[in-house]
Length: 121
Image (cartoon, rainbow, N blue to C red):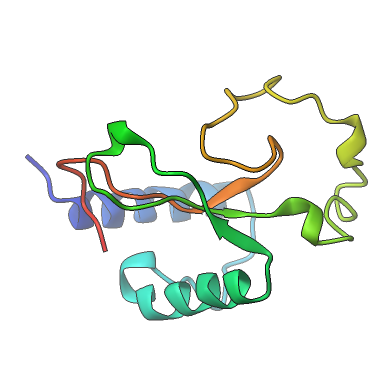
């Protein structure tokens, strides 16, 4: 019975309380997805144009006719540098189920098509 926006705001306040209790510095900017959709769409489009992202295969169960968009991990040579992890050491499917529509198991979703009844943009 609670709107997605109200739930998000309530969880945002709880997250801020938790971060403060942990002694985390207060961020100078906390963008909300619902308020920055044009910027997000522009960024995803830019990644697609640069061949760093691609639309996955249509998945029938989604019900919306939309496509998921995935980041092509191997297109970014420094991927894993911050965490000091090599893609070659990863084991596909060890943490989460390998999704359909992806070119490679390590690719991850930038944009998920809405399923029937879900909020969407």
